[in-house]
Image: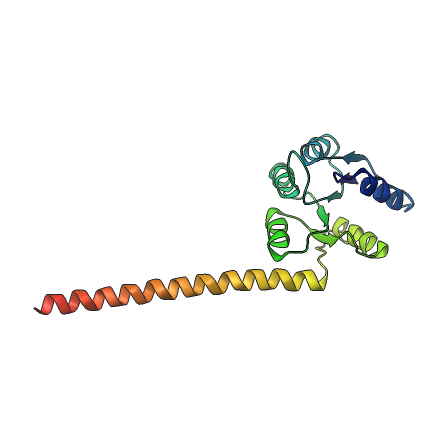
Length: 165
């Protein structure tokens, strides 16, 4: 595993938790997004825990860079940010998991194992925020298309009426 977080206390805590598990090994720690990408390219870890907000390169930027080199990279965003836009951007960039830092220890371990097995791991309450974000975007697009179609129909009617005179 690779752990990327700009707070050393968080990194050290995660390393301590993970190294207690016999089926997990930490191969590297990064303090910023650029370092995370470099370490990922060097080690190709099975799973990466990635903070969303980091210096030099944020989590979404790091995700995009890593996934551009390997679409199968398994990355879990572990963050304090639960806004629908944050979740959306991370999942859109290729995150296979999204957890908040206040998640119970066993939820984190379960998520790591699930993502390692090729599954996606997003808690129900965060998935609901993501669904709201996506459905809101779809609704906006639908409204825009209807308005365009309505405008086009009105123009056609004006053109037809103008040609009658």
